[in-house]
Image 1 (cartoon, rainbow, N blue to C red):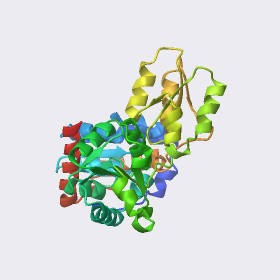
Image 2 (cartoon, rainbow, N blue to C red; image 1 turned 135 degrees about the vertical axis):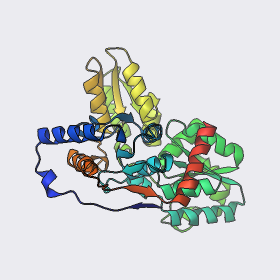
Image 3 (cartoon, helix red, strand yellow; image 1 turned 135 degrees about the horizontal axis):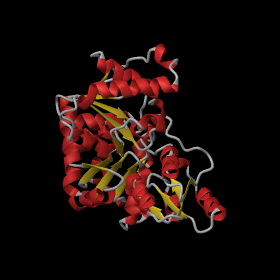
Length: 364
């Protein structure tokens, strides 16, 4: 498990103006120098990510931090599971900090370890098959460790297909955690029929499945989702195409199967960024992912039309909890020799979670 001590943002920082915050953050960052590395996830707000030394998805950022051994402090401007992953991959002398420990991930929280263990026991009892677990990196350290102990691996949205193929080459069935949509979209692209992918609902007896359905399924999909990506609907795709003839629709595989079937391209956050950035001037993109990334791409590439294909703002509200005020307080506390909001994974959990991450790297 991960341990963390909540520290509350002092009222003093709430009253600071934007220029004051920027000046103080820059000053504290400069004073900490090479002892500090700030990581900013793609979905983070602009006024925070502007101070990041690295910008990217959760795994990429954790790996980059691990390659900076001179940095004693890793400040992760993301959500809780990301900070856990950074602690799993970092060296023992490095301290990982999440500026606001309330920045969680609803998807990661949907896979409770006790529920997953009950699912695992039931599936093994009923099917008698070799089942290989796979967890999306958007999961808690406890779930990653469970997967590691049981012969499975972690995946990202970029390498999910390769890891799933690896799992099914080693077992008759796979249990995919915690996002059913990434699992379904990946399985379908691998040629697995929808009726051979069964959703396990942890809130129902036996996951809501009959024994026949358990025996038939090749992939068990945990009933979890990303609240941001599930907001995108098929009618949003059609509306974008009607409003902007010729626009190319690109979306994240955490979106529903129906949305992904309508899109021109489906890919990870890094894939979306790469396709849009490398497209020629005049290109048109309707993007199905978090709004801060979409708006940032549009601002950085004004010679292209880049829009979200949902009229409503699809914002990651928990990511938004990381504010300039929290970042300023975190850095100034470090300057004063105090660590606030550290995230630390216990050694046993870290060991097995690292095993699951290493299997991913070996298989992809």
